Image (cartoon, rainbow, N blue to C red; front, side, top):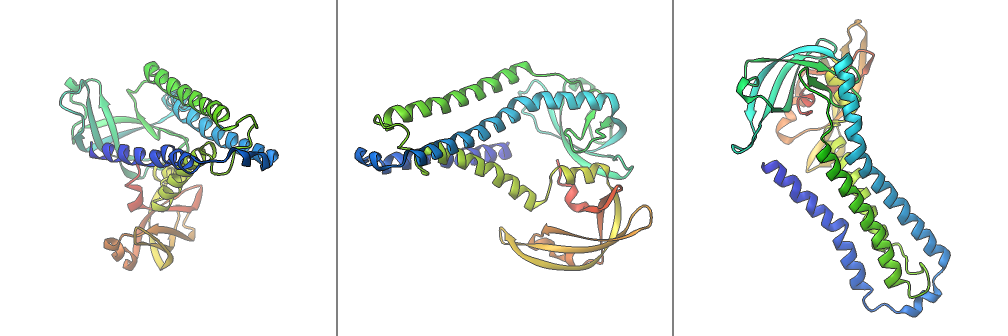
Length: 328
């Protein structure tokens, strides 16, 4: 609950600086704007700014359309593919924590599962499950559940319960479609509003690099790619890392050398690890990886061996086993 509240707070906080704040700042600065200065502005430069704003908003809106609507159909297609050709595994429930409210109709659990991945390596993974049949008490520590692993680990979900069914939530899909339509209409309406109240009969000459039509879209794009960059720097938990967890082989790697890269995130140093290990064909490899190391975890830099996962088809692609435990 606290996690969801924190995410909501920061989302609203960032949204404020992406939309209301640039608009307030722009109109406050231009409250005493001299209309006569519009005559001296180059119309072609203004049209260039207009085209830039349109490009930004198209990228933003198409991104939201894919995330809110298209991904629903992609996920359904992936689920159907896993049901047809997924690799069956039996998972043991190591830990189960009920996270749903007492008043909820359905019980929701956070499960820690232990099972073999696609390379028959034992892994642990945390996931959230909504129990539609709570009377059967299927999700308790010590019990086992049947899973189907996705053969294509570049696509989500990475696995499903064998009892899962691939269906679209029409109500949620309609709400998302209405939300995207409302956002698109709001952007179009703002273009119309800006032209009517800022052009003074001189076309788009009022457009400038600081206009909210440009700044707001730019900020939304900046947030999108900044968040992706931060998550990749903090742990590199992308599709490639997930593939290493669900299709990789665990082994011991000798720590040859470790040094700082000079980068710090939240005052925690980024370290470069140089590792030596043998693959399943007894070929020796040397690879390096970077990791943000907490001040309390610096003792790992003094260990002789570290557990890693590598991909059988590409042994140079590796990840620390301790990092993979944090992939959800």
